[in-house]
Length: 270
Image 1 (cartoon, rainbow, N blue to C red):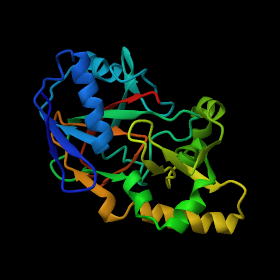
Image 2: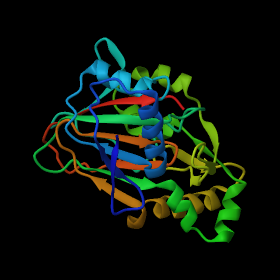
Image 3: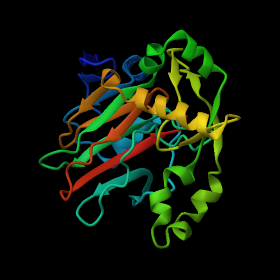
Image 4: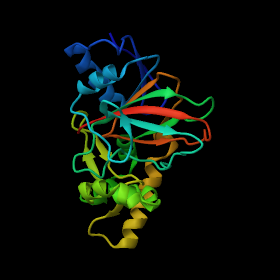
């Protein structure tokens, strides 16, 4: 039986009572998904799982994605390696929702900590449903009819600016042209409305004057990362975070350089 300990924030829960190296029953899968949808991100400690276990767990919830810009585990193209150290500092500094540059962004991601720095390296998560609910009625009504453009090129501009970056990412650029998403979406399970913009990938609001678009997006970007919508997760070796990408924003805290931090992530199709 899954045990759930909610965080002190509007989202997040630590769950225990099972071993991720063993198969789940149908009831456990259903229960897990309910807990995830309710809490938006769940944390699990002390899970020394194999690559096969990681893949099996993710497969319970949908088909698996690969990422166009990151290395993967040999034999497991679904497992993305996120590794940073002195020679390779993290380039992701912004709050974001994963891969919103796709027509069908991911359902969620399962991230495990393999090498954790002695200090720093936490991850922040923010609730996009709580952020929408906090807006006044006038702003909610204004946003309901709007669409915004999300762009791979916008999100990976630093990597593209590196020597050889455009050549290295040419395939990803071609496969991921700018895409339009509603500024407000409804979560398919909880039915809660969520603010679906993020500073990393959202470039502008469609059919809006550029200055008005910039002002509105800056307001929303600042709003969705307010402390009252945020929980903070401190990593340990073999800790896992599984977040609902349909309603959660996240941000790595890059305060551990030049220490080594290695994470492995599987992303589940939306």
